[in-house]
Image (tube, rainbow, N blue to C red; front, side, top):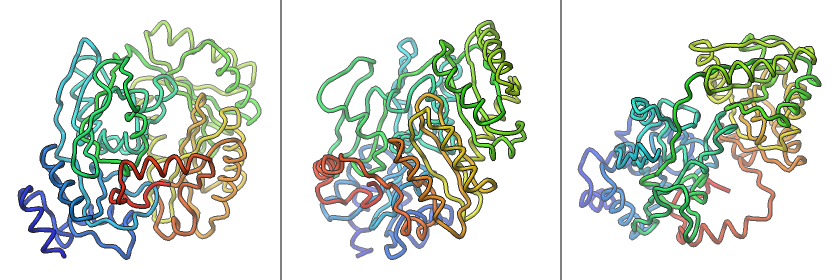
Amino acid sequence: MTSAIASKLESVLNYPDIIPWETVDSVWKDKIKKTVDDSCIPNYLITPSNIETLRDTVKIASENKWSMLPCGNGSKLSWGGVVSDANLIISTQKLNQVIDHAVSDLTITVEAGITLQDLQAILKPHNQFLPIDPAYPDNATVGGILATADTGSWRQRYGGIRDLVLGLSFVRWDGEIAKAGGKVVKNVAGYDLMKLFTGSYGTLGSIATVTFRLYPIPEASGTLVMTGEVENISQMAQTLLQSGLQPTAAEMVSPSVVKTLELGKGMGLMVRFQSIPESIKEQSQQVQAIAKKLNIQTTFCQDKIEENLWKQLQELIRVPNTNSMITGKIGIIPNQGINWLRKLNDVTPEKGWAMINLSSGIGQFKLDLEPSLGILKQLRSLSQENKGFLTILEATQAIKKQFEPWGYIGNALPLMKKIKDQFDPHNLLSPSRFV
């Protein structure tokens, strides 16, 4: 079987782009072993060097009914469900070119394998940036970020990744290239595939190119860190939501985060303003005045201290540092965010860290759950009781087999299955990774 696959792939791929499992490096193997079922060892890691080769590879795989797991650099490869079968791991890491940058229109079209770090470096000389701050920002590719719907704290001002995508192209299960959207903000025709592919986890096709809307880099930035009693922070959060203030990021953070980052005591609220200096000063003073009345401690930071703070926050919550660590994503009614964080602190005060976006209720968490999964069940129940969800992203296969990663209980499953059947009728793309 392996030699048969190799001979067919060699007709469209150069030798360096076909890596047999035996010679895959240890870093990639570790990533793959976390997401592909232990009983299923992939045959090859494929790294096409251009979109045409990606198309031809998928076409050959489709004709031979080989299962495929699309990915970028693999930084989020272990997110979601355990993949039940994957003959080929297809990485777009070599598809890293800028196709078009319309500087005056604030749009850019890039191949899916370009990393966010490289993209931001290209945009910076033009005083532009893509306002997303996902996990693993140094290695994450834009295709992987889109496929996992991983936006970050800038969601407060700029929306999710789906709100920043104007168009995309992808390789279908049968090897054909399809396109959707365009290079302008208003472009409505047919299916909204940009939103459909956001969070699709490689189950509908392999993303080839993406067109983003961009924003000017703010002139200045400043962050207010507030800590205090749960009730006071909760009132502060509601006051901010009802105010006319316009933070670019606003995160409610658990007491464990406050303690670990040495921000103060109690529950935390981090609010970032990015605009002209005068606006930052005015808005910060308004927040500080409200905080003083509520007996909330405030600290204002800028420049390198501010940058490091947000970086430390991401790394603390979103990067597991032991095998027993679990990372995940939650959604909850925004006004119940503080209650969820309080519940987390009650059930695991020393081994759970989380942040929840102030306006959307979307958050991330990290838990050290060895040896019990009962805490996860309690937190998922609380999320679902408040019209939300709890999804496991990174965890061992053993944990994911004991505790279903998605836990979806909505009524959209029949529709989702029909879409999956239409885009991937033979279930060849990332089988069982998504709901």
